Image (cartoon, rainbow, N blue to C red; front, side, top):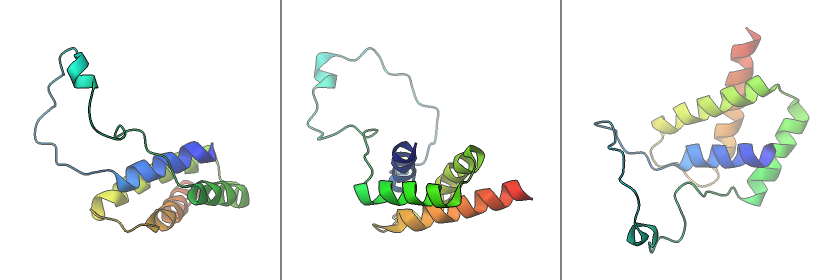
Length: 109
């Protein structure tokens, strides 16, 4: 679970933010030319650094928070990411800890 959580935190924290002005138009069936791109990876294929995955695992082991707190922390990280348009490398740890603290505080009261 820690590896998946780390990937979600990285994806939400460092996601490219673009304003949505209108609902997206559903794409037509992709052609072979559409599938052959020069992009090195797909935007959704984000992997968390090993150090962050082990950090998340360690924190989850130490705190023994419930799954509800973990899910709520993901929501808080996503909300915080809107306030910081270009976060610095390594700031995902702080965002994760703040999300856990806020989620735990919210569910305790």
